[in-house]
Image 1 (cartoon, rainbow, N blue to C red):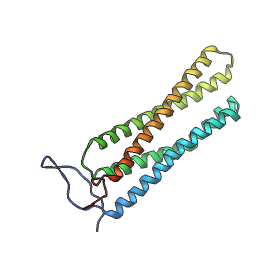
Image 2: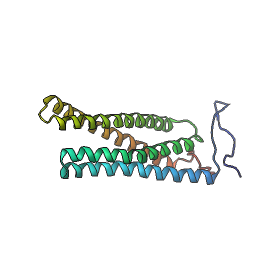
Image 3: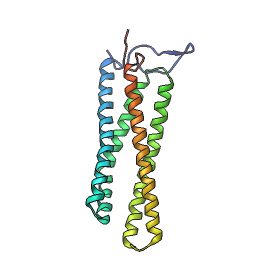
Image 4: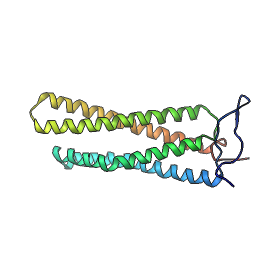
Length: 186
């Protein structure tokens, strides 16, 4: 049996673009989705914990250096995990009829990618800003910019966490749906 099987469903009598995976392929893709989601969500939790500990235990200059290194080391891991999770989820969802949950999942995924990209850009900007503030410790303008940037960073981290968890909840909610992808319940 091949990777793909079955016929495309119809929408209002017209064949719809759909992908029906053979069970071994769907199971393998679901495993990739679970693993990638675990790495992504686990990474978010770990970063929140590490940020708290670093704030308490490291000086400003050491924190800047530490988080710059962390971003460079974790960025590719987290980015790959998010990419794998979204692609595997999309392929699995391609076998489902379009509904409100799929629309919501798509909107959340697009929002998550946009907010995460904004977070990466903002983190890089904050590194440069904090380095400048370290070079000019008495600058009220730099101090105010760092404070505003820190508030923006917190808002972006919160948005990434909320969007990630909302997407996870929608994915888990799908588990009981007999129309879910990869499920040929009779």
